[in-house]
Image (cartoon, rainbow, N blue to C red; front, top):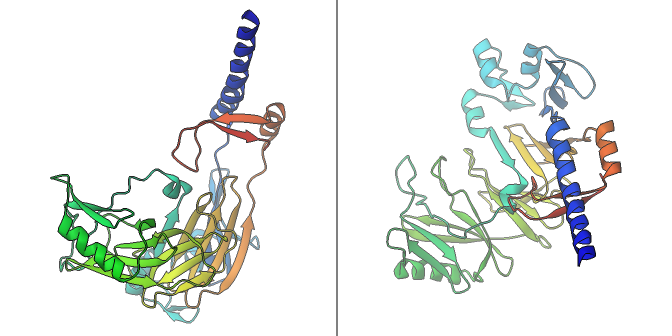
Length: 357
């Protein structure tokens, strides 16, 4: 019995070592990640970088040419347009596209995604806003819906009771379009802090995609045709001001698509190995080009410049993560197995073992 107790104590001590030592090192000696701001410039046809070194801002392109602040504004006129307007230096056109302040306010957009956005727990209850209320400000409804194997249920939040009439109305609307219950994915932006509402994109149990929203109290359901072989895994409803893009869609093969709002067609974007469950995604768009970045948990980042008109690739650049320091390499060599309970990829607390670097 005493021998067993010693073995058990040694086991617990080993577990504490592989957990506490790496955690303490990371807490006390880890370096702050230095990721430059990167944006494609159609003016110079190259990526422009804003970084910091020795406490000073360094503005350069991939060729190594450095720029002063005013020059940097000029090569990125669609991003720094407010400063150029104030200086009276906004160009009339960029890369053959006529530019105006009103156009930039409408066409410029920013999309950001982190792995926790799709890996976090979900309660499965969603508010359905009125998409055509006739009012400028959107309002939250007094009920929420859920999609079960039998259909759609609307639950009155004040009474905590199912609205049978409304549930039947919206369930029949989905059934008429051959929707297979339940839904695999319910993707939307349930907030009133936006200019308009496009409802939700639903992926049914058969893998078919639908656009679903409420228009003047009635259900709007439209099937969205998918390209052959597209296995939808993630959907991000956009609701940008220009209303050109309805959503971004990622499939199981690592492809990323833009779902065009007017035609309901999927436009494949020229990026490789897109995995929203493990990568941070950023898309900064303007009327001329988009800059797409995909960053994994090691810090390796792939940048893609895409034409905003026909979505062809303008330029690509892979930026590797900073190599580990000598202290980090020694730490990994001395203790190749590390135990953690949390991860930047999700919100779950559970034991996780990491091996090597």
